[in-house]
Length: 454
Image 1 (cartoon, helix red, strand yellow):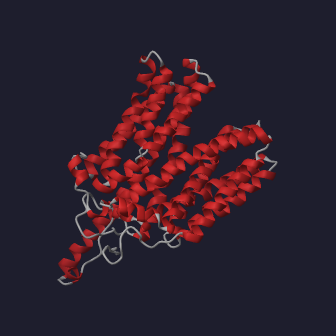
Image 2 (tube, rainbow, N blue to C red):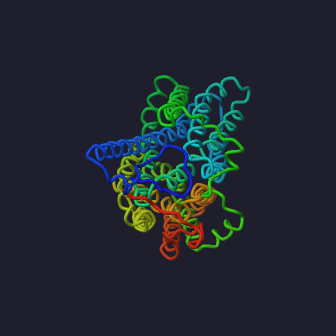
Image 3 (cartoon, one colour):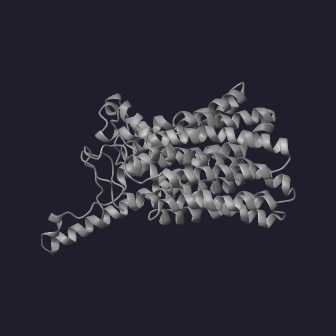
């Protein structure tokens, strides 16, 4: 792995090692041995950072999915109706939309590692404090709705910060593998909290799920600050925002020029389609299985697709480091074939197999669109990804609601699967027709940015 080196100082720990300079090649055997030792040290540090970010994303989803796991038990305890339960669960999503662009903007200026650290400490503490709010507030429905909204605000900066960090620290040829590896933490976190959380729920009550996931997240943030950032204060001041490096100082005119680029519009539309179809599948697949196969075991169709998604996400990174367009082809094209096959499925094992294939192939988007935005605009990749994620989140809400309307109107799941396929194909065609890997955030005659490879 190698870092993306630019003219000007880049603060924060490197995620990869620098290329050997010409002066390093001149010297005796002792000098070569020293350089080799430094090379190995930087290589190990890059791998440590990859594992730490993977674990952080895993804990992010553990804290995020804690409420859905405990929602039934909490609804019984506090006498919530289905509408009130839905209000609590949905409030996270609305908060999640509002900090995407802000998180990317701040990360581009002060460093993604600082934003990740502060946000993780905040949403981890909020998760651990959730049972206290529920028990000591006279109106738990309002306190839980507010808590979930704040959770969404705090967690909304996570992925834009990751993209910003990756675009500034990691060379282009390594970004696909890093993003897919870290992205697989979302599926790992869903599996962990689904298994361990259900066990804690039965043995110790719903409060334990929040306490454990929240405190582990705070512990992760502390270890990251103590051992990787070496105890440096993760303080974000107005002064630091104002003196953001050259890579972050894009004027309004530059932003307008950026959005006029066909490649930028293509990546936004593609991400919008990918996110909306993923949210629709994630929201409606459990209901599909319950309606179509009433006697099916919930743990089967809630677990097996995520077991498939983890290795698929890792493999997609290796592939897309060479051909980014292939990632979107598999994510939106091939996955749509298996989605359509669900229309005529009559047996439960076949349906689980098709859904697993669909969800596994969908993970290729982590190393397709998510990497392409870093190639297009590394100077503002975090903010641009925030714009993409905001559009994808809002479109996801609309498509989830519209899918419910189609199910009620037609009485069939075929219309939903056809809708998902059409949206996927629109995104795929747009990406193949207009997407590029050429940098568009600076004028080629004025910018002198370059990558240093090993």
